[in-house]
Length: 387
Image 1: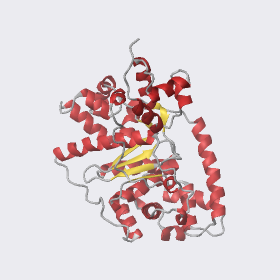
Image 2: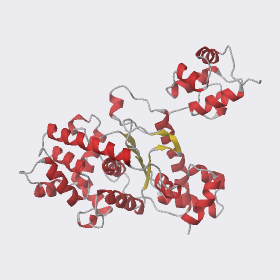
Image 3: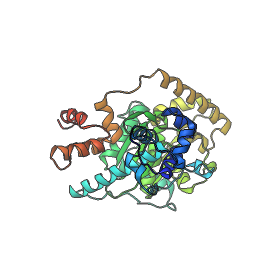
């Protein structure tokens, strides 16, 4: 059987990049661990079939194995996660592939919008870190029509999330929500690693939400990433609602959290409706209906304003997280492919790709790749998207 003359240093680089140890890699192939060690030492070569399986397991193109040196793997996206400050700064292979995939799509979408004659988005980088938090929050609220009165068409916080995503897209922002790498159901994104990221661009600014996160948390993440765009600061975030502002070391993340909190639950309005005599649970539920956000967002805002203690908040937060976990277990997974694709890729981006393919500006195979699917699915999607 013919062997594949792979470069041993590339195999080692790919394995370490994917955080897969030799024993696990050997088990997945399957071969003995000693054989993988010989491949990495260059004293033995795998067969072509084994090399192809290695590429699949390690999530690299097969051709990489024949390079003399590893390709540049740096991504031009600031890492603003709290885990970075704890020394665990490397992106996992899943997060790295997601960011690289979105950057590739953004390059295409930017060129498409310019060619179609679209204007620049006026509010990207409109403010700076030194700008007043409340002023930025008011600008976001006005631009996206998020006042309490204008939220009335949403009957609960889940509808508010959908409405918020729609208004972002209608304003020219591009929102993607996906809980896996592309369309691979075996590569579920880790909420503990990141909750979302924002990539600034004058024409195609994008927000990516980790769809594996609880929907209640996604509202806060979405507005947090909106703040990134208004500040003109790209970055990957992992800030959860169980962080106190004083515990967030990065000044950009701290500022974006403050802006998001003020957009979702304006402090003066909250203080007017806060009932000091009621327990946190009752206040959170009542105010949740009023502001159209989840009770955990309300509780977090009450903590920021020192209306409840951290002990009260964290106890309430842990109960809510446990409830989310139980609901996730009984909720059916997946959904219609034709309904989830525009959510995962963004409705306007999906429409743009389909229109470009339909008018033969983009090849069918390239359009399918942009939407993380295959040409057969794309053909079936035409009457749904372009009707």
